Length: 260
Figure 1 (cartoon, one colour):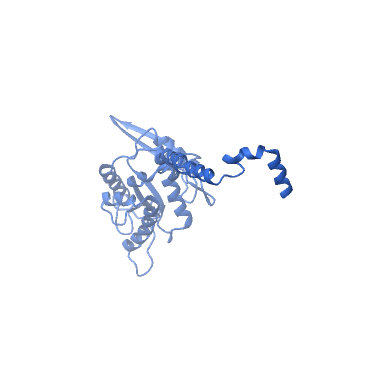
Figure 2: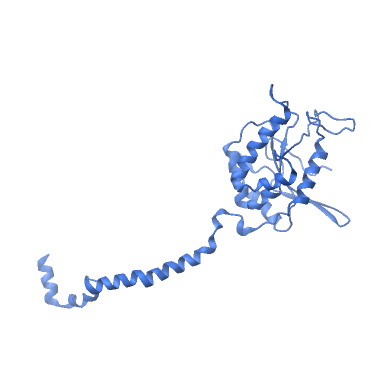
């Protein structure tokens, strides 16, 4: 059943994330379909905020982070995406994230096996995500038993098929059953992701310390600085200190004017 048009090279036709649910008996499957979060050369955080609003109402078992297999490097924009997802949705999201690589029909370079090519691309992405998420993605990888931490898919009509008309990758992996198996393993081995608005921003970290810091400043001023200033004025005085009464003496004021 087709619910949305998609574009593998940019933002899809929908302008905001959409939650699609289907129920069979007591089981309900909800898919949150998101457009691209990159517009031009900037991050569209409104999309992430909409995902956060949807996550407030439901727990999320599996997150699919989709990237391309035929890209050979992790760009600075990719790093910004990882950081924005972590900042808006929180580090815990990555514990339920499965890395999915599209364009899986790609032939590897000469002298390199398909498995090594996929592993190299996945490891570069995983390393960057771990730096942005505090190594939280590693938990999802361990749960899946996949050292590379990635699932390769292909939806092209030119993709090879087996005798059951299922799409298969160059290494013989059947695309859809493999993806569903990895999703099921992750969903059963990791706790569901629950959106926590208090933890979504790095700016909110350790904010509970602010009242204590303010109280410490007040006490330091009252018991240390105020006493020190008062003691100094007692022995030395100045034109604004304890000897200020002398300035009311007209003769003293006249003397000071003449001295100037």
